Image (cartoon, rainbow, N blue to C red):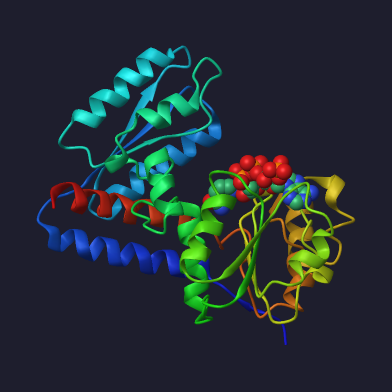
Length: 300
Ligand code: NDP
């Protein structure tokens, strides 16, 4: 029987409904500020949709848009202003930043209590100590997706493919905190196929289309696909067995796929996230949840 689909959009709506109900009962509107520097089109979309979603759920969401020529000192001064603004509960600085700005210095400057992306070294430290306060949104969303299946994480073998600071490492820390036995695989992992095949839970966060094949998946595993890859006509042979994506590719000239060969892996796994509509919608929902948490903690 093919794997059941984990409906990220639905789970995200549930999280958003919880956040919005809690905000309505709070008596004040937590404030989220999304800072964007320059005109990267993807960043424009992300920042706008984060501010919009915040407003939709009853938070005060706003954008600070700074020119491409902003210096590191200017951005640090803006972060400092936001750190000191009592109306601001959550600050996120959209990455990537223009090359004259070191993103590490900017992340380090954000007040950890307002760091709703969970990237500040203090929050990373808490996370790895098993005391996550503001955990990074994408991995936190993946945990919520696994929980939505009813499959228990405790005692399971989990393999995270990818070791970035934003996804892979925090994902592994959250799975460990939930008592999984965790392996992190990466580009230097030997015998990747047999390593991944040991997993009851696979999280793919690489950024390479079709790299997780059905041969790598243990029958009955839960598969979470974080990857977002836009592929064009060059991928048509690899996509030939996926009629839906092939149709979209022919229609639009390109198509969004994950890291997992969805159609084939679906035949082996027990649960699987689609791309799009899986992990993607969770990231913004968890950001709203983090902003609410930050507001409650700061005012406690
Ligand atoms: P990075 O490029 O920072 O990290 C990729 C990781 O994959 C690295 O650790 C790298 O290993 C590993 N890797 C690369 N090639 C291989 C290989 N052949 N075998 C095994 N491991 C490999 O990416 P991110 O973590 O930022 O993002 C990963 C994917 O998730 C991207 O597609 C991104 O677009 C997507 N994403 C989606 C989000 C969402 O909301 N849905 C949010 C964030 C990211 P090494 O460290 O050795 O180089």
